[in-house]
Image (tube, rainbow, N blue to C red; front, side):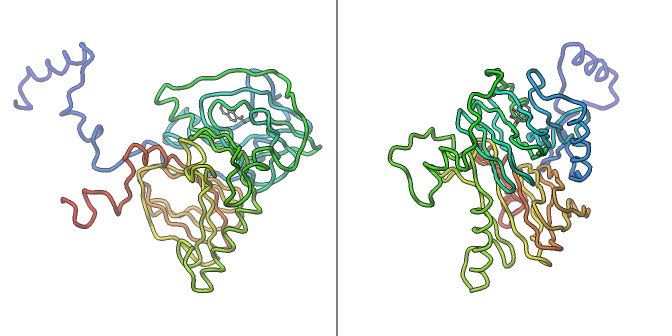
Length: 360
Ligand code: 1HN
């Protein structure tokens, strides 16, 4: 085969006519040496997001059909798509005073993380769950859910879903529920929390589905206490923190110890002022939100200043290093459970092609 043989041009045209593409023109795109996502590292400012969401609150009703006043982070590397990364949907959802978002369910897994405010209840499979600052609320695939705001103030929060992954796999299903929320009671604790929310205690009568966390709410008071204790233990010379000045927890299914959702991992990190993380990459994508504090995300070497509420998309194999200016609490979610379970999860330390002792 020579590149200049005119028969080769004809062959390539004929491939095209027959719906075929030869590997030799595509190899580096199909099989790059490391992941080369189309999504790019990107930061969205909460102040701007919130202001735009509030304008939508004035102009766009929430109700049957549209279902939610949710505004998705659209990665600039994925033009026209409401995708934060190749696999993750992240949106700010805004619910005005006394408004309600109708009941529905879908195969996609979802959660909410609350940056500020309170007074909204989300009803998950009939269980009313309060949403408050710092809480993580779960809506696993196929759980019925609707939300209502019991106050005279608007409330906005972060929604995370595995929509782009579900999209790629063509596994999307959706069903409308009754238009009206059937239970508008406002208990402080959901039934799931009353049954499962006691450290180390497993209810003998508690029925569970293995891939579905029986807890719909993970409360800030617990997350905060866990992070504070790690740093204190570290000061006392005991293990537990990720690194000096860096505490972190993963939200877990209390019945299995596994991730909170089959496709999504959620974590909270606390970095003391002046500390930072070591640079790292992984074959999984994440979205981070600053819960409180300020700092810098260095993404593939480029600095992005962040403050409270700001969101950062970290596509697969982006090098991440985080620096805290003021004490920095960071919520993060990602698709790690997927690549892990498929044995596709690598970091730059475990990539066989380049790790010490690997083939070169
Ligand atoms: C959804 O059900 C919610 O329940 C939020 O709050 C965002 C985006 C696409 C499809 C369904 C919610 C969503 C969504």
